[in-house]
Image (cartoon, rainbow, N blue to C red; front, side, top):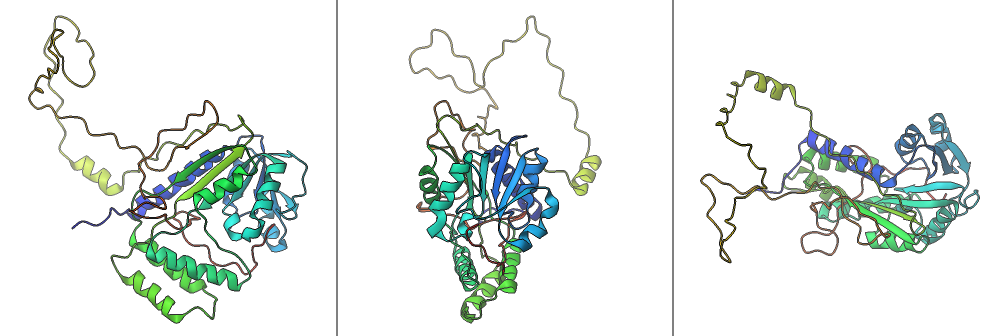
Amino acid sequence: MNGPARYSAGEFERESRYIDNLIWDALVVESGSKVLFCGFGEDGRWVKRALEAGADVSVIEHRDEVIRRFEQTGARVLRGSTSVIPAATNAFDLAISFHYLHETDPFFHGQIVSELARVAQRVAIVEPGPPADRIGKKIARLYSLAKRELGQFEYYQPLEYWRKLLKSAKADIAQHVFAFAKIPPLDYLRDTIDLLLATMKVEDAPQSDLDELREMARRSDSLLLPPARFVLVGAAVGELPQPIFTPREEPTPTPEIARAAQSAEPVPPPPAPMPQTAPPVPEPIGFNVPEAAPPGFAPPPPPGFAAPPAFAPTPGFEPLPEGPPGFAPPPPSAAPFAMPGTPEMPAPPPSFGLPWQWEPPDAGGQKPG
């Protein structure tokens, strides 16, 4: 019996990059716009991407070591807290909370989003979905425990939680869910667990849990699902721009494929068409029906006729359940993983890089601001 479809390492890297591009497109960061980020993130790459797009970027941060680490990016630093942002009302076109809120005390979520909505015309929240599979849930529990021992937070919330939070501050909400279509390669699971075990600094973590993680990593049938990625953008009524999404990246042929193509026998050209007295009339796929056909008449298909395959939409984008008047999102995707509450599967775990991996606990702490 065949198991679930699995990415190769190259496919998984391309899909990770593609999902990151979809997230970026959903934010609609325009050249010349004033953008505020809640912190630099783990590697500052989203701040750098906004700068490369021509945005005027500010980052609110209070930790000296983080400010020193990213001082060469060229972003303006606002020293302060996201709970009380030192900026005037509508000072920014867009405020972005990127993988930030799940690492802050939930008690402050409402205040932070309210402040972001005050200083920016649009507010974007990007968050990983909660884990769904058995390994993901165990990793999330241990990782949350590790953070808590360091005085930090790590709580993953469902999509509706973030929607209600943003809806309390902005009238119009656009929401997107991006997910992987297949299971990652086994190396992804092993590397993720190795990273977690190597960075665990919690002396009270039960040894039985760590042993179970190691055993899971050794099993060939173990699955660790990448997370769904939630992107929600809020604005005043009628002020949500429509994103233009990046087309899927075509894989580059490997040298082996290129050599095989060169050594393959040439394909003979198709035979020349028979001469015609008049040009053919273009028709849709199908066949002609006589004008006077009786009700229910259906002629048999011609010899060799094969119906075209059903259209399979590109995974990665979920349509908005609601939006401003006239808003028309791109075509919906085929849901690769069921969302929380469905009988097939709840929702996958969080993601940061290419390919995704768990962020090790940061001894510096992540508190509001």
